[in-house]
Image (cartoon, rainbow, N blue to C red; front, side):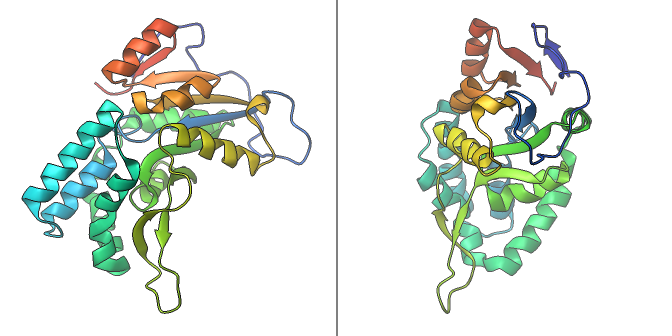
Length: 254
């Protein structure tokens, strides 16, 4: 793990109360560590990897799925992704397979793919923030079905992910429809979702000290909102901005 030196290179010092409490908070007294997931805490894109995993299971037409999956991924990297179209595509297989098959397959995905890409240095970074009393939140543009178990593997309960609509009508399946529920946690949507998460706890941006770790230019809106933006394993576009603005740059993976 390599952290390029800046004026704020380490975790803030001192013990912090991890409970929200009922008393009014002083400005900046609540500290929140926000983490993107894909290519930030793990060195892969979990949604892309899940798509490859289900393709190997025979849930999709391999050639067509790979073509579309690769195209969506290139749009994501370029910052031009249509998130609604992508989520419909990415969840089509689990919508068809239903809950039982999908949950069982994801458990295999966790055992055979994800456990091998959760690195000690990433776990330590999360644990260091938790030990310091920070509220740790994973904020990801990947959907909740894929990412909830990954967040739990990191010991993080607070997850802001793309929420999925369920068919809960009488006689419905109570399973995913392929549509997004509410505001997707993507680009500017991450700011809105974090803002709502804070508001649900009686907090606002001016009341909290936030550190946000991300690799992607797509997360520029939330990086600009954070007290301490940390370009983590940054893509070329984000690296250039971080260097220009003097942001912390963290190389978490080789």
